[in-house]
Length: 107
Image (tube, rainbow, N blue to C red):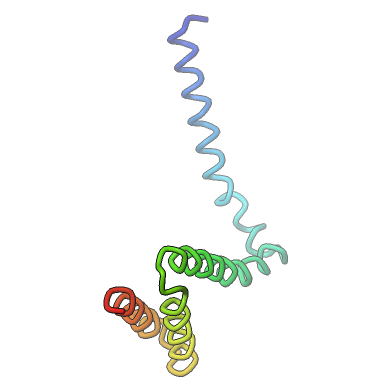
């Protein structure tokens, strides 16, 4: 096999594997929608991922500034309270973000 044929064969094989991996969820969608483990992960994962992202960003931001984690903690508490009170995610996120940016820039 020549080098150019080998390279083309490898590229075609990689393309087929990539296509198969991306197409697999569509072919298995019927099974995935009814499986109890997938259903439970669908309910649990978004909250777990958002919590991990929040903790990671809070710890990372708090380590960058000498003031400590207080602006992050206050912004998170405000977001939680607004969400609990109004049940409006857009209002909670915008208010928490604005509060955090103001505290980091002016305090």
